[in-house]
Length: 396
Image: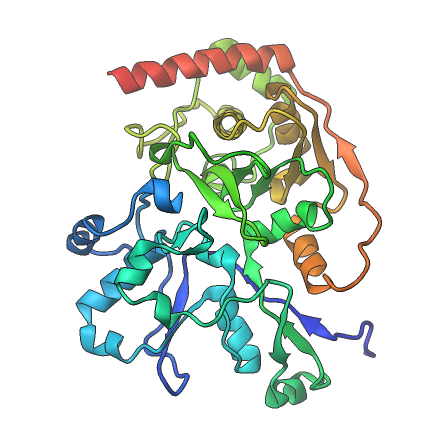
């Protein structure tokens, strides 16, 4: 099979809250931690005494390894001899840039992704990172679209690529999705980025007033600007509750008439309604009813996250949810502004491509499809029922 496309650049994009430790000889000091691996409780407690406040970092206290600062603290305290060998800390996209080129760099979207290590207002390291000496272990900061170096010769030869292929610095995946709508300076709609996490993002809005106890935070975009965000594990919840079950409007109407409501569940994360974590959120008598309750639940939770960041105008949905017409229709029915999706729903890929070709003229605007609201009156009445149930459970 012949070559279909010429490859002349690569840009790494990955999830956040993950880093690699390298020694002076550029070798991994230990395996890279999965951010869903729990940090032992005694280290979490000790870390709580030194982590900076939300007003400085816009980073809420999160469970497991979702605060990168907590991961680093744990490893520095549990194995000080090992940690003394650490010369470089690389965020995960920049780890792959290093693997591909041997060049070391750092980038702002990963630094500003609920790490506790970054101060968005100052556009610099947090007091924690400075006081602990960790700031000195990160390489120099570059822009996501800048080229670090060209592809290592051995990798180029193995892949049949020219050694002139350049490798960009790379970015955090959610911010790559956001880059697809902000890089060219267009008026930016609110963005619902979907995958494992459903993240409501309001570019251009003020991060003032965010409530960290409700899983609100400010991510940092590719230009270093804080972006108010609220989130929940929508993709994980959807998979667990709805799965491959078929849901139609008749099933949704039946559930709403019956008044069965799914309560918030957050799969070990803090969540929108602290105090309701854990448990089984959906009690359906049949698989179809359970799936319908689950779909309504995801739509209601999504709308609640958008409310938290005051995303009241146009909303762009990207990722797997953009291909779910019924879910998008329910979200549109709950929102005060226009809801749109793109024909190509993977904004992470589109944003990464736009960053990789930042030095080229912008492509023509991509067509967006307006989402038709589904069951508007029914789901708005159901939302009031759901809110009442949540309030009652919190008060119990």
